[in-house]
Length: 414
Ligand code: GCU
Image: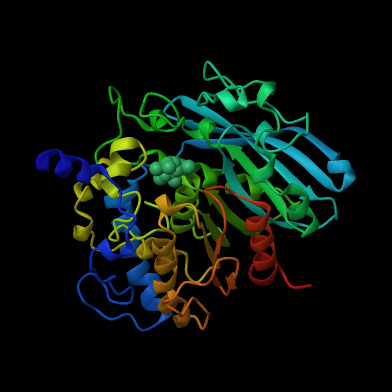
């Protein structure tokens, strides 16, 4: 009957292009009060900061201050990793604030070539030990999401899950390409659950506080903050070229990688792999996942202020292209997958396309065409995009593209 249909219609995601609402993507080179931005200084001093504040206040939430201190310790290492072609280091990062502390571990592989290497830095979903079969990788004792397929129960990681995510991390290809890889289990920075009594947020509470304030950070901003603290360590490691650290992430962690790149100009480049809603994809298309859906299912990811846009995306003063633009003029790669309609591949592409005029201010090439490239035909400019066949995932194909693009746009020329 009619009322029931109406009710279900509200909860059915839209996958029909003809039902995408008409909207205009706000001009990146006009400020909120209507002033034209004509040059790089207008971009850097006026427009980019106002976009940053918009996303900070309305989407991801503000970080309430700075840490009191930070320390690093290399707790394990070898110069004979991956059959001798790589150096492995495991670093404990300790963060201190208000008499409280939290630690996370960076797993770092670097080419064994005596050079300071450019690296990809990105979180993993189930622990550093899942990304490789290397039995020396320390198993985290942080809270983890149960996963029957991976043998994870009681929210505890064990060696049963060693190597279960190797397919997502093309370590050998990365090393052979002259890059290093740094990864962190995201649950060590903030467990991915709607509970603000643990993780990073707790360190910043004032006496008696139990939750971030309405305009303060959710989990995505906390993960982004953790990436910056990892970069603080990388700057101290002479085997790393800290001017060439690429912020990488898949899906929710792609949202975090983008926000890390926007918040911290030290990141040399950003790669968004299937980051979708609240990441690279335009919200106003309401295609696949929407703002209302993401806030309902993951209330802890964004600031509470973001809920004002539930089913009200048109009210956003700027869409997610305003996030991607903050990466400019640094290299930016957005990637989609054909079967990942939930993340709205077209919305991801268009968002990257819209940032082109900002890159042009710097004489750099974006994605000039409104038409999406064909599946399997990557476009590699300073702004890059590909869509591949298959599902929501990170594949060898994705890494092959990232490595060849990063060689051209991020690595130092010999
Ligand atoms: C869910 C969520 C997405 C997110 C994804 C992931 O599908 O709705 O927004 O990107 O999980 O992180 O894998």
